[in-house]
Image (tube, rainbow, N blue to C red; front, side):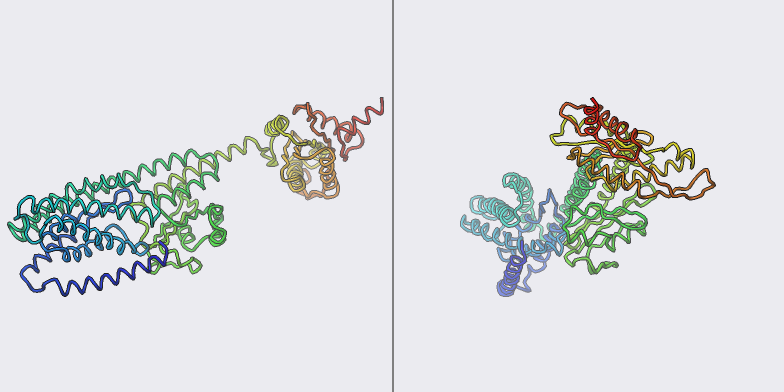
Length: 567
């Protein structure tokens, strides 16, 4: 419901209360002998209303058997007044708080209409209040049964229409009515029993049935809580299976954030990873740009949890001992939990709701279980990705290794419908560097060359260490001439800029050296295989660059043309 609808609803509700109060003062006798009896019935109704059962998002109230007896004994007005108290008690006991208080006037009007229609049917069929079961079957029990059926049908129909038309929620009318029939089959006999015993033994009946219902109610609530906990554990288990099935970090983070949002019915979920005492937002792509910027470097609650390692819960903004002044005021409830990996705090998850008292203890406990599953899952994914990277990366330079390059090249040769080329380059006189400065210095040179290639080559290129001091660069969407330009940029950079190394053979002396390379370039032909392309680039490098003095860029077309001219 939007704000304007709620304002109209509350206005009507306040007006209704004024009218109800006035009618009560005028029409309900005060100081008569039934006052204590009425108070006893009211207390019994409040007791039964305080034990609602929440079943799949529906609040099932169990006070109707008392309201039936009250209607038959004292009439419609007394029943409506007592029902008002019962509604407030039931909704409060069901966890309705600030954000959903509109349910009080909604349920009040639903029960008001239900009572009026049911009473009309009762009176139409000749029923009389204040006569108990003293009349004949046709005179009283038939109207009572009709009253109960009408109450059930009208009440459920109104609730169903409100959920579908106003809340836009999915609701099965048939399943709901069957559930109400099952409850009413118990409530109707209880109501008639209360009416009969109250006439037979007086207030003792209220005490007896109140004690009986309290026992039954507590049993049902314990049963409901156990079923509720089992359902949550089942959900958490299913969530855990889904998390453990993720094989990429991005997919895992996205799924976990969505799961928590659905599980807690939250408005915003933020995930952080802690690095060097700072929080980095993990799920920024799931947030609006405004929220993503706000949470980028961590909110106050998450920082506190990361520093202390202890969970934090705020059920109402006004009661919180921590206040993030940057946090929009629409957020009223906060739960923030550390994500632990053994003894270390890996990160933090913080969940926000616009409603006060939104987060229940049971769900927070289940969230803790889910967070522990996520902590293990992300550790496994990180380990998997590290292992995967190690299997395709050269450990020294961080470039792709020969195996990965050959797979990428084969795939491109077989699938590409665009021009592409490769560059094969070999560092000139690299053995001399190792002999002069030591092998570690040679490794430093290889790392520096790899860094330069990463910076100069196009973003879509695949750079690999072919072996030793040889490298291969795959250039998608580059013909031979475009690839030549990339090779020239690399050749000019290598020959013009020196590399600072620490010599192992000269007692740690730092030395500036220049390293050049010979480049061979080949563009893929229509019938070329991966190794054909490597051989062409290799031939271009040796025949067009190495044999002509090194520090050159040569293409396969160049040497092919030279060969044809020599013939």
